[in-house]
Length: 380
Image (cartoon, rainbow, N blue to C red; front, side):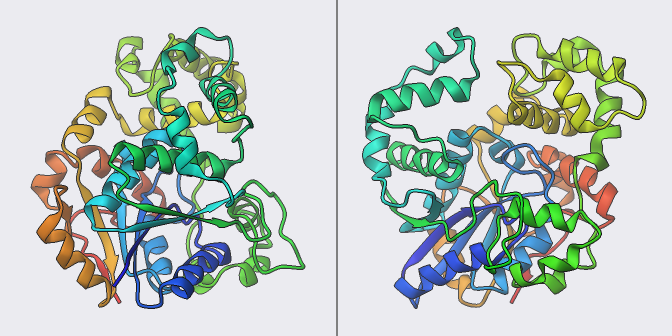
């Protein structure tokens, strides 16, 4: 029995994700698939289009055996830290191999990781470009070519994390089938489209057009689709009402960016959108993605100490499992060093789970469904 790990967001779950799961089953028919999934706020600092329970259900109905949530302190992070937290969870759940999509599945990601493992990231801040651009320059200098496609970047991050944890996982990159990560339009000649293109249509009045790209469309069609537009009034209020010292304690704040964030929130017209605010705040050093992650941290009040605490005392939230997945959970209970939370208690939410709980309540304000407290895992 092989235990296979996948790190995913499923925003939303589409046929490209189903293709990946089918490839795993093709190679290992008797495998158990465990997915470490982002919660209601995603790695790049976006709210999920539908909540974590809907996305977990879609995965479990389409071949996944266990879905666990990567806590927000480990999820809304740059690629390296996101990957590290995902790999750590999968290691502790007894996974033997990690499958992931890649634009260039032929790359030897583990060899690349060994070449770049000693890069001095402190040098990146000395350049008048973003951290991501400085990192790409350094990587290209080490391995001889750029690694700048989104899933390749994550693949390298997974490999670096795997190296850090003693190469416990065998890495299995799978070529992305047809659609590119950032493709903005649906392809009429294929039943696979990017999540970006699917979300764009779901937010429009023509969302029925996406039916053929989603294996579980029935679970989605009656949901309220969530975006930053829903949370922008709350974020703007937080920026305006908080003093500078309070904002400075938010995780990820650096180089005085809190002054600019607050200033633009105050200056822009009342009807200004989140995207307009982002454009006003963006600079060479602060990319859109860095700002959206900062926005999530500000919205939910995630401070430096919260992330430090999670790094020292990690945990994982069980969202759902199948009967087959129960076998892997039994193994994890015996061997894991990370606590597995099956149901969030009152004590949990007042203790270490408080940031996740706040994030859930903020998301719940828009989709009106309880996200955490006493909610039991899905069982299929």
